[in-house]
Structure formats: C-alpha cells, structure tokens
Image (cartoon, rainbow, N blue to C red; front, side):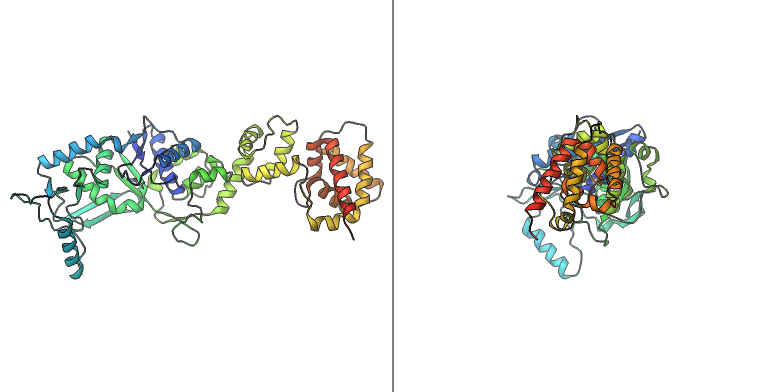
Length: 464
Ligand code: GLU
C-alpha cells in the first residue's frame, strides 16, 4: 500500500509551492488506492498560528484535495516523541549532553578559526562521569562516525554523504521538546509512510532523518525531492511573481482545476500533454517522471489553462462562481447568451465578472476619446433609436437584433461604423467589448432605448 502525506508548518498561508507538493503526494496515494495524510508540523509553538492552520485547511477544501482520517497535529504527539527519545537513551543510541551554550559557542569559534565546519565534537558521547551542576542537558543522537550515509532519491538518484558531515545532533532540547528532524522521522515511520515527496529544500534534512530511522530500527520511505519552482528569470519565486497564498488565486478568479493542472506540470511531464483533468493526472502521474531541474512559473500558461477550464464550465457553474464577485445572474433570462459570449473573452472569473457587469449595468461613465468620435454620429444614433422604438415584433435573440441593425443600415445606406461607434458608446460607455447584438439581446429593447437616450443627452451636452 502506498502511504503519503503533506506536512505543512503552519507559519503562514499555504503557498502554491506547498500546494504542488500536496498534490503530488495526493495523486500518488490516490492512484494506488493508498492513504494520503495531512500532518500539521506545529511543534514550533512560537512560530505557529491558528490562523495559518485554518488557512491551510481552507485552501485544501477549496482545491478539493481530500485526506484520510483526522488531521495529525505534531503538537499532540509529544508523549510519543518522548517515548522514542527515552528508548534511544535506554539503548545507548542517544545520550545527555551537558555542554553549556558558552562552551558550544567557544567550540564553534575555534572550528571557524581553523576553517572547519561547525560541528559538535562528541565530547559527551561516551561520558560516564558526574554531570556538571546547573545544566539541563539536551539529548543527542549517536550518528555514525564513519562510512557514508546514502539518500536514495527517486528524482536525484543516490546521494552519498560522508558520515562526518552529520554530527551527533540534538533530538530533544533542554526543556524536553523534541527537534524537527527527529519528529519528522518518528512521524513518517509511525504513520507508515511509504513515499515522501517534498521540495528539495528539505534534502539537507534527509541524512539526519535517516540517522533517526536507523537508530530506531525503522525502514525509511522512498524519497522524492522535487526541484523548486523558479520565476521566469530562473530566480527563486517571490511573492510578486506569484508565490502567494493559494486562496489569493481564488480571489483572482482562478479555478482550482486550472491551478492544479498548472501545478502538476511544474515539476512533472507526460509527453507534451498540457491539459490534465484530475482523472487524467491520477491515471498518468508517477513520481519517477518528476523533472530533475527546476520548473518556471509562467503566468501566461496559468491564464491559458484557466480560460480553457472556464470555457468548459457550464453556465450554471459560472453563474454560481460569479456570486463571489457580486454578480448575481443565476436566474437572468439571458444567462446562456450572456455567458456564452462573455466566457470566450475571460481569462479569469474576475474578468468574466467585469465583462458581465459591463453588459448588465448601465455605463457609469463614457470614455472621453470614444465620445469624441461617436458624437459626430449622434443623429444617426437618434434615428436608430426611433427605428428600434417602433418595431412591434418581439426581439429576443442576438440574431433578431443583428437583423434590426442590418435593415436600418441598408435602409439608410450606411456603413456599420457610423452606427456602431455611437451605439457602442451608448450601450457600453466605451469602444471595446462584446458584440452589440449580444448586449441588446441581454438587456432587452427597453433598456437599450434607455441607454441610447442617456448617451444622446450626454453627447448633446458636450461642447465643440
Ligand atoms: N513542514 C515542512 C514544511 O512545511 C515539510 C516537511 C517535510 O515534508 O518533510 O516545509
């Protein structure tokens, strides 16, 4: 059985790099009918916040990654960690170290002076004398003193590290609290993890975690250290580049499907396929195909994917999503026409909201440049209004309005621009935007006439 986990530290919101890690673990577990756990690494009580914890859970819910069982909180497992520290002490695989902070600082200074790397020198490893007074000891693990530690990594291959690069590191602080690498290894082992997929910024922790596995007699999981996501310039992704809160993507109008699709491709590929539904990801994902080199964040690609997923949504789904942007058109009688047109021109739900708003709301202002051009043909607009006003047959579809415009232009022997420009400004306040027939069909004849009136009045008030 494949067992994976996502193990965020709740020191801030869930950012997209974290979500990518979560997704890869989720896919591998679900694909194999295994387990995917969520473990909150909240042992650093000073740096954790309840808010961050909730933000992580909220982001998980939004993207729809479901995890098995209850959320595991490290802060609730201190007894377990203590038990394992004690076990190592009892077995002589760990020991109390009474070195004071001053001594440790002095040792560090000497090592630096000699151009050596700072490392604990093992002075209490075999100590059996009387402990110095007034010192609360830390517990250190006995790391191997010679040979190599090999990290077998599914992405990077075997990485051998000389044993002397890992000193007898602290597994329990003087106040008894366990340290990071110790608890991660204990948790991964006791939660039955078979595969750990995580960012390669954690690679330097792995040898220490292997020392813990070895001492406790646990079998290590398979590790996959995934290269970072860089910006388009190949530098570390910053907030400005898009390394923001996953929930920001929701407020920017991205769909979870698009974001997950975008993230899975940052670090993994399957031929040259770009579009992956969750089902397809599940079918095709294998961590052995994770890329060895860093990926780069590309906003155009995210927008392209988002447009794709927006176009594939039903209009009912879109209408529901628009409600988060204060657009309520679920029961609008022209919902289909309105959204069919608007979704073609929208990269995000936010843009869709703007495009819909532009149609359903009377223009709040008129673009100056557009007015300057359009008002030359204000008379034609007036005539069109009169013509439209006297039509008795019911106008409904964009094609009905298209026909009206066409007939009017033919009758008066006019090119489209002469009417198109002022009508556009009247209906939308500006030149750019959707087809006029769609706008008129959506808002109906009465509203069209009203917008024309307002614009004509405005044109007439302009001087020059
Ligand atoms: N808690 C770590 C983090 O938030 C992840 C630890 C791990 O995956 O081993 O980056």
